[in-house]
Length: 292
Image (cartoon, rainbow, N blue to C red):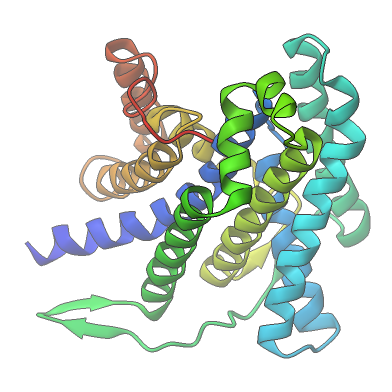
């Protein structure tokens, strides 16, 4: 029983990272109606940024984390302005290919600057493990769960309780109508990219603290899994992205522990196929009330 609970907790830890990344996918899709495949590489940028600020520039932890989030948010906005904004009226295939191109560009730039060799990084999270009812919960897991909960709660409040969040919901419903109502659509889309990239930065910080290594392709697989999580939950739905990410992490963890480590990824993607066959819009996609 304890082993099952520990696997569920491990799954929630991995799922939290997927959920943070999936939120970026689903927000951008909800607002701009495009799949930003470069989003997964933003967590790689976040991981390298933290490494540079901490290991190279010897900055204290808190300013380093803040600067890492700012760097990713700015890069997200720059990518939107340079690569995606000129393609607003282009066919979806052109936007998709551009997104893939941006993804490879970020990976190759990282390889050019830092080489392809993995770089070790000492975690900045040094919280000791906690034992509750015979179950040991690592400090990194506690921090991951708390940070993810805070980010999700803050994002939900922002979308539902602020003027900017209302603008995001309006743009996601109808861009033309939102523009007629005086909403600056371009600024709203840029803000969405900034928020999504900031969340990806948080995921990158947690990821590098968990695995203590960074390399140019770091964001590739988590990015794909986060995209799967967004689709699983219903892409375009914020609660769906959260649910999809957490669910994906739990399925992956339980599969690795009780079925096969090699088959875990296949099982995860198999679950996605089954869910889409039964409900093509995802778990919360069709009937989701909240959409950005």
